[in-house]
Length: 367
Image (cartoon, rainbow, N blue to C red; front, top):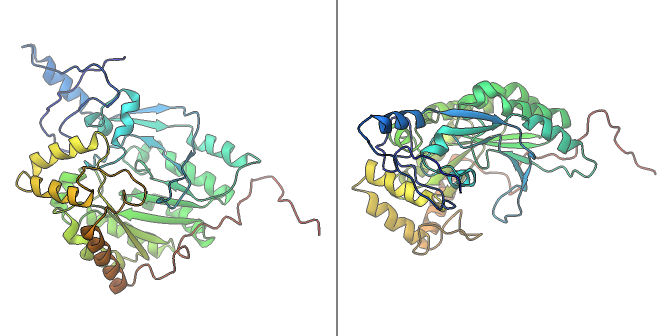
């Protein structure tokens, strides 16, 4: 088992970082903790670990496929592993454990970029047996996190999708998506592109604490407006809904989304899988100690007495009367705002009929 040096298992919260601890992943068998030996080495180690390091790597595959009944897509691409946005609630954090890295601070500071993503996607789409279906970007980590500004991996993926007429759906918290309107707008005209911007809260102080390196809430809404004005179907994800922290904002977020040109909205209840529950509890005690017990009590009411519910059908929405109340509030807010007017499926821009492999003539009918 490979060892790694922790940057302080109970490190103090640092400005611009969501997690205040760096616990071992669930696969680790040995634990090491930094301490002050009088030579100031622990302090230097802490400082080093909190710098963001982006490592380019050549992935062996690019499309992830799933058959989950509560996810509206079957294939996705994650251009990056790890995410500098630092959202404390991020359900993707446990994926860093597969690299012998922590789902805590490591997840926010050790980012891996799939440098050959566009090349791999081109090969995948060119395979004779490829079946065209919507590709989701942002299903795990944000495709427009800070590293994308220089790496441009997501943009390369979109360029390939545009060339093949491959439909794509994007979920992001970063206004950087506006940079790629020149690609997304022509795709949207063909029914090949849609974008959801995640707006967790309109409270800048809560956003600063809960998702420290994301675009500010108002700026995200401005991105929705820019997308809508360019003819790109835009929606807002009220996600995650966190009891006693942002659940009271559902109506306000939906109304703001409509005012900024969104056509659709959706919501997801906070999930706390594996190490995320430990990280979130620690964050609660540091930032909202007077609310911590109330938040977790309400989470347990929504999750059948547990911190997390991994079951299909309930993991995204929770269960019981409280879950139904959130759903009713959300549905009423959307009706008042004029969102989600199309019948289920009609609003999904995923035209697969136009897909083609460049340079390959489409097979015509024999009759």
